[in-house]
Image (cartoon, rainbow, N blue to C red; front, side, top):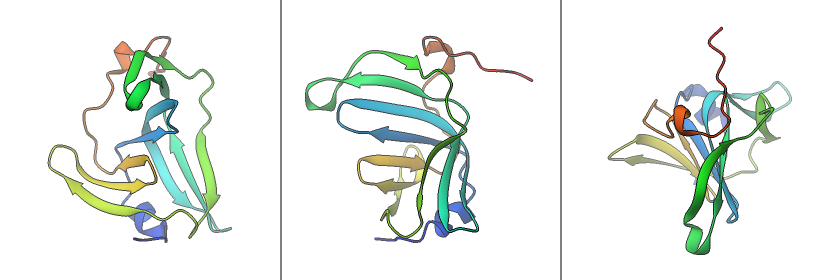
Length: 123
């Protein structure tokens, strides 16, 4: 188990993040992961989609865009969120922390055209 998020930031993740609190799953492409001068980890995303989880964590309904997605999805002190880096055959390396996953490489994820209410700027 690792705790220093500089290891993740140095890999410059270009994949996506999946967050899961047992009631909802949130998914979005990563813009960047940085460790600031104040030793805070910032995970930045391009956009986010959310789906409700039913019994046994099974998604129900459709993915819906989270309006006004914050640039910084989450910020927390470095060295407090343990993670494991592991390889997956279908999506390559990822960092797993709690019930959450951060994929390092660009991989197929949720098709943005199938997310209700998602408007992606092309400028």
